[in-house]
Image 1: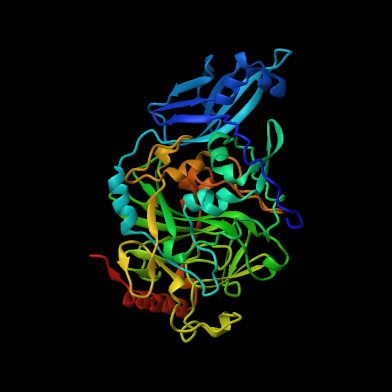
Image 2: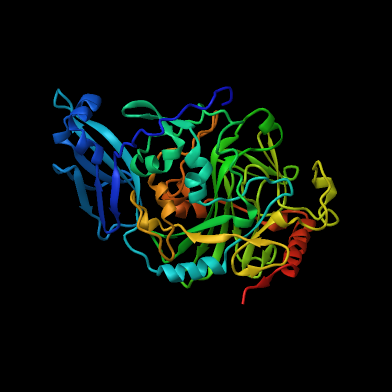
Length: 476
């Protein structure tokens, strides 16, 4: 990934607006402005007659709508009564031989209805919002999408990312990346990071300030029951990894997203906490192989007296460098990657199970704990909790309003944000597996049982809870 100088970007080149989502609720509506303005060039480039374009919308393999695209290159479909979730829109046209060919495929998130108001969702999200526990050496903290894509350093850089589009391989100016993502959400597009020198990349330098971190929450309903889910999302400009993985340049990548999920029953009582970290099929080992799983996420009872928590807020240790989320502080191994999560009280934690390259002081530094807005502290700071409104994802966002952040419009991009050489490329929400099939994501996660671990682990969890309880108080 290194060895390439940053490209001089096409700063003044307009962004091609290929696919604009206008509505994505009970009715789905989209248009293709660039084809409308350039039908002859489209025919030459795509070898398809623009007058023969048709659309189809599928949920998995089930066709839910289809039809012609009108002369203004606009189309709509009635989705009243359809279940919320990820759908796929495909555009086809006829070539010069009359055969129909696929031209465009994009995932879209459709939320036709919700059983709860945005205000009630906010109340629940705030009530159970997690406390994040970082290591002393952590340098990157969660950022907002405005900082990730519209900060001054982004708007002033001349760097580019490369994307293989239907027009061929193109250099997309990072300063225009937000607009590109909103109007070019093809599910096969990849933000190729190989053209960027990691040492010089503008994203590597966006570390985030722990004093102004942002965490997003989203709401999804179980499609087969009264159960519902609140996800908490953290986004980072860069995932540096640590240890030998960092030295070998295995895994570090631009853009990172992590999340946790709380599952609620129909009476709005929390039942389950799911923490995600790393890809499926990667074996993860905890403390000398005391636990091993390869599901990419773990499931815990919530609330649970054995888990670390402050009042109703779970305490979630964050892995140094990778930002993966784990149930308890300690050392975890993933292939060549060894990562430390959270903070250790070494007078409690079993030393024969813990190997780390530095002594952990009894007091935590101020950057190690990010509190939800409902907790106050003289020692630690709060993150800002913002809604990620899946029901309002549009290419052209509405203006700012209570319970809506327009900067999240970039999430209509359904291609691959994360380019990891040697590993599986990754999409951002709402097109990761968790949002597409959240029921399976929750129910088939590895079940974390505290009883098959040394008693000192749970003792350490309680000490952690007591320490943070002493250093926090409810916001009146």
